[in-house]
Amino acid sequence: MVYEKRSMTDTVILKLGGSVITDKSGECSIDHARLHEIADELAARRASALVLVHGAGSCGHPEARRYRINDGLTKENVPGVYYTHAAASRLNDAVVAALRDAGVEAVGIHPLDLALAEDGRLVSFETRHIAEMTEHGIVPVLHGDVVMDRLKGSCIVSGDQLVTRLAIALSSRRVGLATDVPGVLQNGSVVPRVDRTVFETLTVGGSSKTDVTGGMKGKLMELLALADAGIESHIFHVSKIGQFLDGTGHGGTIVARRGVS
Image 1 (tube, rainbow, N blue to C red):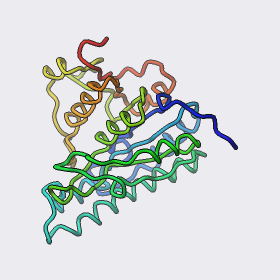
Image 2: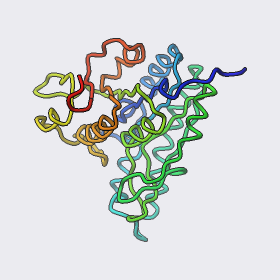
Image 3: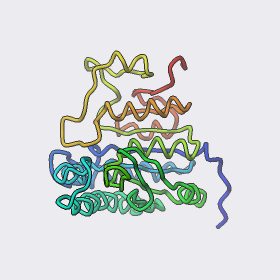
Image 4: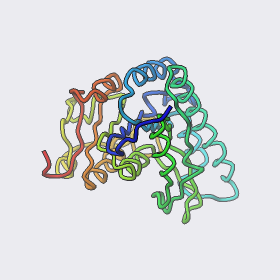
């Protein structure tokens, strides 16, 4: 079969929050039923090229915290690189398996294998092969992971940081984050649009459960950097994945550049 060449702007970047597909109060407790529901939703909508990213949830965050991966490597915590990566990879395997069971041609991609950071920020991240995969109908599935860091030895790179890098590298104009909440919340209500001015008025913090990547505040900081590059993103409840992919109202939050309506 010969695949028609797609514009990279047609590529959809979709991130599944770790709390959506795991129980973050447990330890690598994977919600297989939820994964299969999501996989069926994605299998029914394959018009655009898709790159999937997922958080680590309870498969990686507990290990990263236990071994203090973000504090840098010493002789005492070097084993934590293996254990953290192994836990995150276990979840990635489950996501890929669910997608493949639904008929999606998914392949797992591990950031530890292709990324380098400096002081917690990516400085090298190969994406050309990811773009090539989407041209042939393959869905790359990446995840939050431990990566090597030129200053600290190691660090955790969140799925949200990967989303930003992928969207820019692939020139994507469709970026969505499926979460366990309906959007960015303020006083119990969804904030429909967030830019840097609105962000300064919000009261947002980290995750209430084990999370070494900053929770909603960290998510918004990544997405505001993406908005600065001219790429909007959408935060919505996981039950609204279909609406996001269809381009209809998801009732969540749009993160945009200041002054852009």
